[in-house]
Length: 228
Image 1 (tube, rainbow, N blue to C red):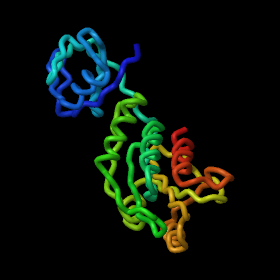
Image 2 (cartoon, rainbow, N blue to C red):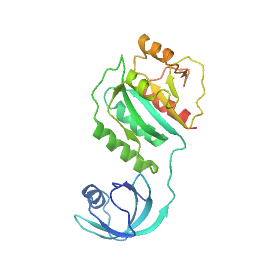
Image 3 (cartoon, one colour):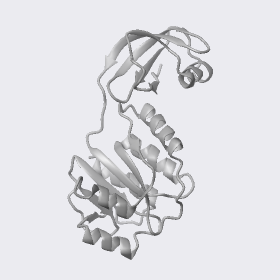
Image 4 (cartoon, rainbow, N blue to C red):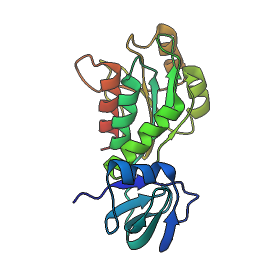
């Protein structure tokens, strides 16, 4: 039987033997997965532990768990910052989900000159990140913040980490960094003013594909290349 993983608030101490009262988890275990005493599950706190537990007893509002073993934590091999221009409809959800699975550690949504959507549901994004993390098996929870302008992002991060911008047709640049930020533009591409910002800030570019990619595809393809 597949072992399901569940993120738990780091404030909850994952003891050898304890009762858990998390309403979200208890509802999922009882009503969705139909768990009963004797079944096993994995809890991780995103900071220190991945642990296998057995359910000793489960009630409508609490469950008694007993530790079976500790797992080795699985973390991304690189510390990747994804700066992407906000997209329309559910495309942001798709970018966040898939690049969490690939190993992005920090999400920074951007407001660019040609960004068509400026509203952003941060609580929903955090929920998607947690669900993707539970599913893919990684042990840490990526960070995410409210949208900022491209100029703000460059002012804050340029010089602290290597930044690379995606642009079709440019020569490949060095991408073998342990810490790196990748900048993905909107569907309409970078504006002339934004290209000048990159030049003046000495931010190199690289071409992830010879074909024209949609912005959400470009984000996923870029992360897949950087994580190697």
